[in-house]
Image 1 (tube, rainbow, N blue to C red):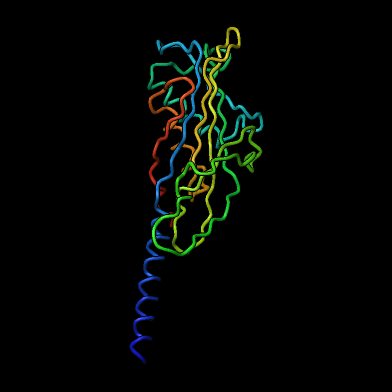
Image 2: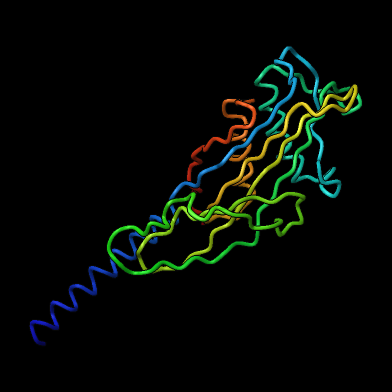
Length: 220
């Protein structure tokens, strides 16, 4: 083998290792949850009773919804609100919904250094409604894009939270939390999005904040 061939082989091996490491890093990277919240006359927690209900009627009574609704209940209770025995006995009605899309394939290109398109806000747009048929749409960005060579699928997930005063139906709070990640497992995504929603709750009305969510542990 010629010296030039040896050098080419070494470069190929080094490049392969770098690609593998960057692919692994992409899979392990945390996703960013963007949380937008709006409020109007939301009372400070003083023991007011509340009940969490499904915004989507098809989810009402479901075991999966009940599991996620209990996370919202725990968060509300930790703030100082009191869970009601039923929606009929609640002073506040908390409407909750969640979803994840069908994913989009992303392909990395070769080169040295990061692409300017790595900026997660670059080309921020709308992706349409979730594959589950949820009633809301969210923006999409790609936090994993750089100049390595690999392909992977990213998913956009989100939750929506609304709080109404039961006495007159007045909307007191609206919030959305969305994230892009390489996971489409709702059992992983929803708890993290709920945590993001209640971080600094109720937040500043009209402000969007970004919360970093830990990467999903490997699923064996």
